[in-house]
Length: 85
Image (tube, rainbow, N blue to C red):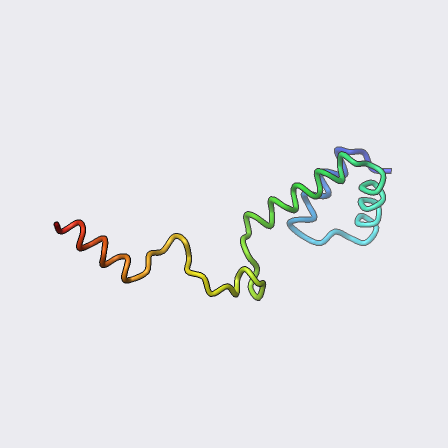
């Protein structure tokens, strides 16, 4: 049986590369029995998804909405005109 320290380390490792089958099985068994490590696993995977952003081909990535960090050309011109005044 894995210790919690080993389980959390392996959860973190699994974000970087696939774990061997035997290791994945041991980790899953531990996560099924340990609610604290299961929560850690869910939280760390959620953080990874947030940091990586929308995946190519996902609904969020295919959205036609403008990037909130970019101004449309008409808004840029309006700001330029206001600054010239």
